[in-house]
Image 1 (cartoon, rainbow, N blue to C red):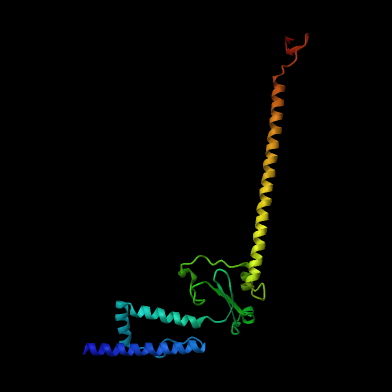
Image 2: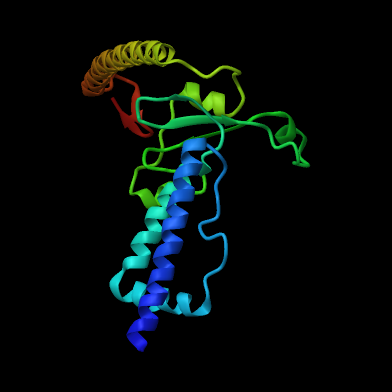
Length: 220
C-alpha cells in the first residue's frame, strides 16, 4: 500500500514537471515573459515526497537548478546592444515609467552581464570570476555620458592611441630621470672641487710678522 501511494505521488510530480517543461519551451519559443514553475501549488504529500527523496538522492536540487537556468534565459529584459573583448554583454531596456525618480522614469535602463551571468539578479561574485573590467567607452555609455554605444573599431583605435601615449610617457620619464642623474653628477663634481679648495686653504698656516702679537702677550 505504501509503495502504491509513493508511485502515485511520484507520478504526480513527474506530470507537473512535464507540464512545466512544456510551458517553458513554449515560452522560450514565443519570447514571452517569465512564467511560474508550478501554476498550482503541490499537495502537502507531494511536497513531503519532494523533500524526502530530493534531499536523499539530489534529484530535486538538480532539477531545480536546471529549471532556474531555463527561467533565467527569459528574465534578461532589454535589448542587447553590444559586447566587448572580455565577453561582457551590454543591454538597454525601456525606462521604468512607474518610478518616482525622474531620471529613472525618463532614461532607458542600461546594464551589463559578465560571462556566465544569466540575469542581472545573479551575483558575479559567485561565478569565480575576477573583478569586471570595462572599457572606458562602455563605462561612459553605462553612465549616460554618451548616447550611442561604442563600436569595436572605436575601442581598438582608442586602445592603440592609449598605448602610444603610454610609450611616449615612459620615454619622457626616462629622459627626465637621465637629466636628473646628469645634474646630480655635475653637482657632485662641483661640490668635490669646492671641498678640495677649502681643504687647501685650511693647510696654509696663519702668517706671522715680527713685532706683531699672534695672541695677546705673545710676539710673532
